[in-house]
Length: 212
Image (cartoon, rainbow, N blue to C red; front, side, top):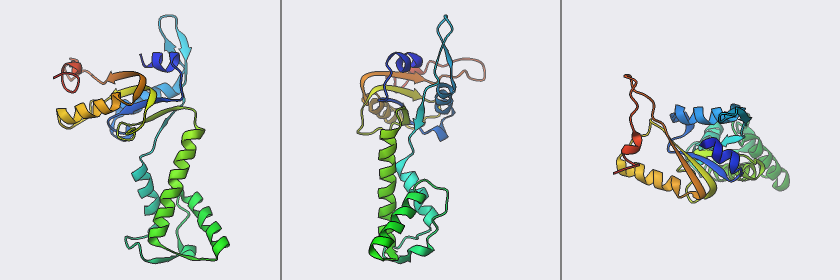
């Protein structure tokens, strides 16, 4: 079914959503990896399709925190920092762009110091620009958490519903609703139902959030 959505309704405006990120769901990771490895057999004819370009979106808050942590700025936003003493060599997304921005600012204004608060704002602005450019540059299927898809819509949506999900039935229903309503044209929900130690497969569609 997932190959049907991706193959017969090809669109860069397709998203794979999951309640938890790939680091917390082996199921979500394995499905996406399977689609990107390809080529994959389709039906009894043995016709092969794929691999499909899929890119996991990075959590914005985590990405910003990683960049700021690499700078070792501290918590006081009012402290002046000597730009020449900043650690701008870490292999973290955004570091090179931030270094170029600060060097350009120093050449144009002659300023060699900047408050911590200003540095944090500049780092966040640069990461936002990088994400915006990436979204326009990569013509591929997007993979992300349902939370990351908030206030966004996609032509096609595939929801991977993992076994690892915890929380109340009501919170699961809200998550599922939020995921389904991200789709403008079609949505496919794939529920992970692995066999237990006795080889029995539980019908997860008979329990929340799929039923009362």
